[in-house]
Length: 181
Image (cartoon, rainbow, N blue to C red):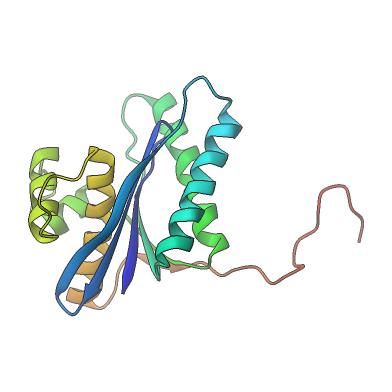
């Protein structure tokens, strides 16, 4: 099974693609989508959407794992992250991918063994579990790989995950704005 992991963020959206065969996992590719803070919001969101679509087309994942938003004291940052997450989710929905959503604590628990692990512990375990020669950089890519690993482990360990099926809308099932039926 090929799984795309996504760590959403407006400035940096990490992505990582893993392939599982039985109990073994390997990284196929990973990276980070960076947007320019000086660009309009709509341009930044389109960039995230389009780049996620390109990753999906290139690596053909069957499922996607995305980190849920962690609301902290900075609500402005949380809203920006939610918007970036939405752009990535629309790209995944366009391709009809099965979706797994996980909190940062769930991802850390699945990858490290404790939900209170720090970034360095997560990066170390991602590198070890995927047998990478070096730490995945930037850390957003490592977090995306961790989300994909979390999904893979939960599916293999328990036969389920916190997932949803995203169905592609039937052709012609939407109206363009300004048209009448």
